Image 1 (cartoon, rainbow, N blue to C red):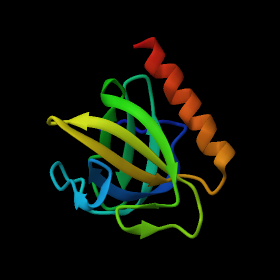
Image 2: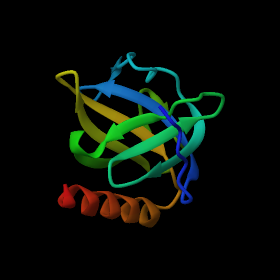
Image 3: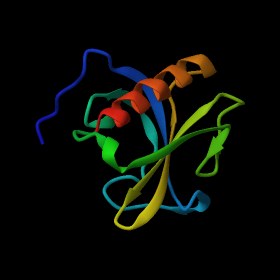
Image 4: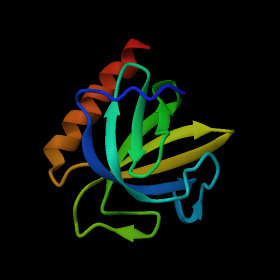
Length: 123
């Protein structure tokens, strides 16, 4: 995969991916187990998160996204009351929830969710 970074990439933290929104059921395939800091961006096709020291981003196709949620903890990690973006999506017949700390401000996350929902409506 040719890595194409977006001009709008920003830093964040990937907290992990849960199966069926259960913190003790972690999804481990496709390099989704390791948590870490990195950069995120999104376009008309997907939401991407590239962890530092890796070469391929976590890619969540917009067509697989079912909903967005907020929380203060994810995959057994608490983020000091900062809002966590939870992307609920389907892969391999499983309902997955991937958690990202992408801002300490609810308004920023709501803006990103709105932009992603607008892209979903275009599909």
